[in-house]
Amino acid sequence: MPDAPRPADAMRPFGRIGFGCYRVDDRTPAHKSALEQALEAGCRLIDTSTNYTDGGSESLVGAVLAERERRAPGSRRQVLVVSKIGYVQGQNLDLAFERERQGDPFPEMVRYMDGCWHCIHPDFLADQLRRSLSRLQAERLDVCLLHNPEYFLSDAAHRGAKDLEATRSEFYRRVQEAFAFFEEQVKRGVLGGYGVSSNSVVAPEGGAETTSLQRFLDAARAAGGAGHHFRVVQWPMNLFEGGAALEANTGPGGAQTALEAARAAGLDVLINRPLNAILEGRLVRLSDVSPAARAVSEHLDPLLPERLRGATLSRKAIAVLLSTPGISTVLVGMRRPAWVDDSMGALDLPAVPDPLPIYRRFAELTAG
Image (cartoon, rainbow, N blue to C red; front, side, top):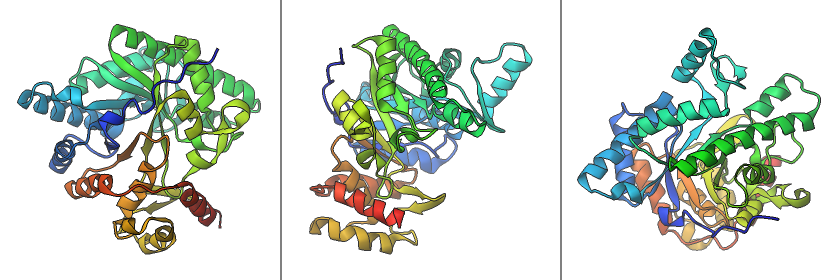
């Protein structure tokens, strides 16, 4: 029996624009100022990870929220914090080496490349969740995501694994065990909910590294029943990378896009890389200071309402995402105060009536 759809936009009260913490740390004063400014401007969702700046990102978030709580008791409850676990880098890689030296390695470690391993085994998740809560100065994490679990699939592809379906079965077994761990943490009051951040969940169906939102949901149902706490999915999306809205790769018969499947399941959708498009290995920055800005605007502006055309390219790019049905929150890297003003200003722009033609147009440009 399928799960009953959850109420849509469950995180919408926490804001349409979230503070992305990919490159922030607790040693740079401008990062602290930017986060404080974003919170004062009404940003109510922060997205970080255990591996961002080797834990410094979470430490900054914890320090800023603790300081705000001292000044205004109860303010922390007004902010939703999302963190992610999976990468084994920096001090966590040192820890993994030390565990191996002592004869007690983390199970099911994916040794993807020198300097970057990956693990979603419950033993590693338990260790990392404890460290995450300590850095965040919290007893409970609102949402915890598996961080790019497809590294297992990527590693198998690089090793030349021949049986793709057997590889996928093992992958989703590991995911289900991770979800079972998360369900237990929800019961204990340590987590509010969980989900997945996956770059390949919007990739074409059939790819060796493509993940399936439907199979993630199946794993959550197996781990927690119809009342499971899989609540959030995160993926990259921007003007050039619109696969979530265009690529039918999941659901019954593979007929749904990731966005359609997420809406049907009542999931909250977080978007990362809204202003950083990756095209054939090249980074295209969607802002007025980028070399490509004028060319991008020339293609974009005719598809926008006239009142939107005078906005900065970054605001226009964010507005397109905010107007896309099914997207809950757009995560923007606002580590400079000026970027906070620019990004939060996108909330005042009019909606784009139909964003799909925009994604189709830029997909054509990419193909060309």
